Length: 71
Image (cartoon, rainbow, N blue to C red; front, side, top):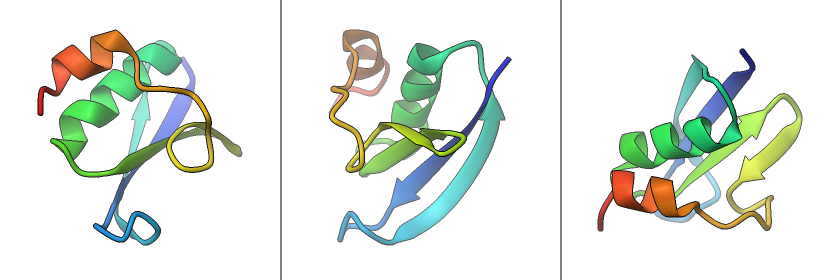
């Protein structure tokens, strides 16, 4: 299983408030887990040096993650 870094961001969307490290099945589960942890706050998901979701990524939030973290 790949290891992911979930970065919960401050309201300015640039500075990191908290970092969680998790081993998850795939990118989709990592984004869903991040959405639940963020609870509406901005976040990024990193797999190694690759940002798979967030400001540094053009990847949209999946429909599954949206349902996992309603706004």
